[in-house]
Length: 217
Image: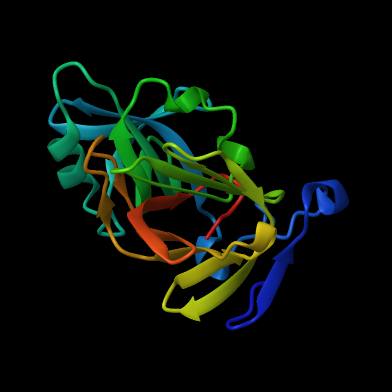
C-alpha cells in the first residue's frame, strides 16, 4: 500500500480509527518463513541465547544476517540488567537464525509493554525530552515543558528506507524524518535501527526510532 513519493493519509481518530493502513499481517517475500519475536538475551555456556516473551522457549542465536547482535549485547550487558531484544529470524529446532535486529536495550519489563503491538513507530530524544508514538490513529507527541499533541499525518516514502511523517494540524508544521541508521540512545544505551529528527515550526530535535508491532518492515 506504500508507494514511493505517494501520500498515505491517516485520518483523525473519530473518523477512521478502525482503518489500519499499515497491516501488521503483511509480509514481504524476504520475510517468508521468518517471525518477528521479542524476548530476553541471555549468555549461557559461551553462547548467546534468546528467550521468547511469548512462550519462554529458549533458542541459541545464530546471527546469519550479520546484525552484530553479539557485539551489541556485550556492550550493553552488566551484572544486574536484563537485555531485551526485538528481532526477526527463522526458528530451526532450538536455534534462531537471526536476520534482523530491531532493538536491544536494558529492560526487564519490555516484554510486558501493552502498547507495543498497537504502535507503528516510536521515536524519542533527549535534551529536551521528547517522544513520538505513531499508530493507525495518528501521531501522539510529548515534549518537555509543552502540552501534548495528537495530530493526523501523511507519510511520504523518500527511497533507501527513508520516510517522512508530516502534519499541518492546528496551524503548525510538524515533521518526523526517519532514516535507516544505527542509533544509540545517549541516556539509556538502547540500540535502535533508525535515526529520527522531529521538526516543529522549524525547530529540530534529534533522536532514535524503531518500528512497533503494527509495522512489519
